[in-house]
Image (tube, rainbow, N blue to C red; front, side, top):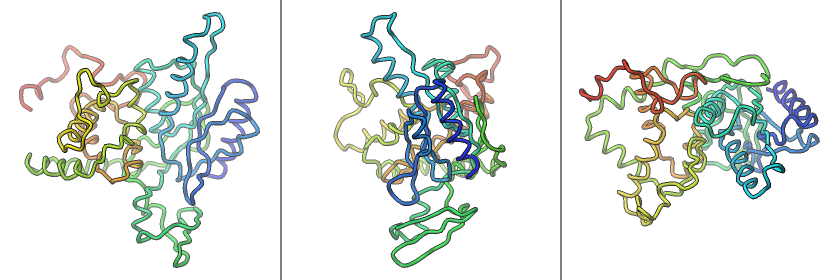
Amino acid sequence: MEAIERNLREEAKRLLAEKKVDVIVGYEAGTLPLTATPTFITDPAEAERLVWNPLCVHNLAKYVHDVITQHRNSQKRVKPESRTRKVVGVVARGCTSRSIILHLQERQYGREDIVIIGVPCQGYIDRKKLSVSLNGEEVLSGTIEGDEIKVMTGTGEKRLRLSDVLADNCITCRFNNPIISDVSLGEPASAMKAEEEFNEVNAFEQLSSDERWAYFEKEMAKCIRCYACRQACPSCYCPECFVEQSRPQWVGIGGDASDTQVFQIMRIFHMVGRCVDCGSCIAVCPMGVDLRKFLKKLDKDAFELFGSRAGSSLEDPPVLSTFKEHECEDFIYNP
């Protein structure tokens, strides 16, 4: 990790100094112990702030889209001959590169608008798992040493295995290396437990429809509709979300359980063929709502019915944006 981090800083300096990018979207150390936060580097001298380690959680493709969109909007009132293009460099692991591919396929920006710095990934730390492992104790300081985490709490020093606190989506990831990149840093990461990817979904499918609905109701009852999941998702980029529309009004602004369920159902279905299982929505949810099980069910169906994986290739468009004359249609008549 240290070698990758060193190479990352050098590459960022070079790209900024040579004016190949206007900004680098990456991670820097957070203000709290054992955290990292997205950062935007525009000065080569600031590249030393960049880090790469298992504390880097959020999918940076979200910020790439926002930066480019905001710049394009700012150019609308500028004379055509004076308009500029903003090129964004981004630190991208496997899931980030998959989201970028989706953006390119959905024509949100062009390949010439981005420079992808690919990094291998062995997973990131799930803060909720870490908290459980520490019995809810406050983390005063901490460091990652090889495959262990050394944590100092109010009751003393504790050592945890990194593998015990990795996010579930990382443990079963089959795309832990970038799909596309302009610069590759480090050796490819070793395979994760990809064969277990759909184990939870397979078990969920064995439940009766009443049991599945009861589980959905239980999970959605936790939701406070803070919309953090939507804000963190790289595939949620509509200028106006349906929940904020008033003509027509799809969802009420109160705390009615059915409104919460409608919001979550519609958002989940908007992710059909577009969720890359980056886990950003789960990571930011303050209530611990199990969104992943429902998203992975749709991911599994898209894969088994159409052989499609979101963002797995520039040549493989999102499943709902393409049509094959002789594709299997049995599921339509025999759901």
